[in-house]
Length: 122
Length: 107
Image 1 (tube, chains in turn purple, blue):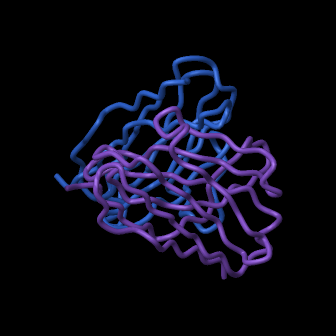
Image 2 (cartoon, rainbow over the protein chains, first blue to last red):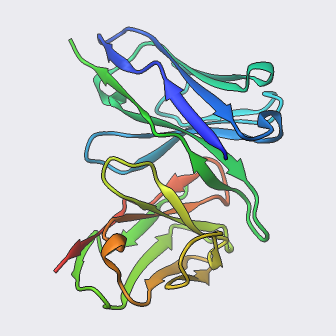
């Protein structure tokens, strides 16, 4: 059974940093591209970052570009999100999600973690 | 960025009702459109991919249609466990963007 488990969330002051982790099991982690998606309290879903299987290709949403860094360690079956210069508007539940490609699809998110809450407040 | 507009933002329906949710893209996206269901406190769950393909394990009362810019998610006979928020997502181009969601509530 595929499992994605996020950790590392918590309360941080504006301007601070946090590192989120996503531990993957039940899959050949190195064979899958991965995403981070976040959801502010009471709001909708927002894609924030993508990483290819090898880590050689990375994309970010404009809202986090230059502040957040996505990375992965395939030997440890883990995905990471380093978040710097945090702002109040970064307060959200952060989900890691696996990218798959069904027939006729150009990408879908078929497995999600349970999410980890990041609260940015003084 | 491609904007995804869902309508309605919320709806009230009864068990066994037929429910239709619409998603419109700001430019053509072929059939690169996914639908997710999210219940409070839970992660999103993939329902439909490539506009009309049913994800494994998803009940057949869920169906999707459309291509280009206009898409529809239909629940043929609403069940109690279907009360949730539904999101569309385009994967035609980066960044992959979501609609703002449609909350399906009990009438």
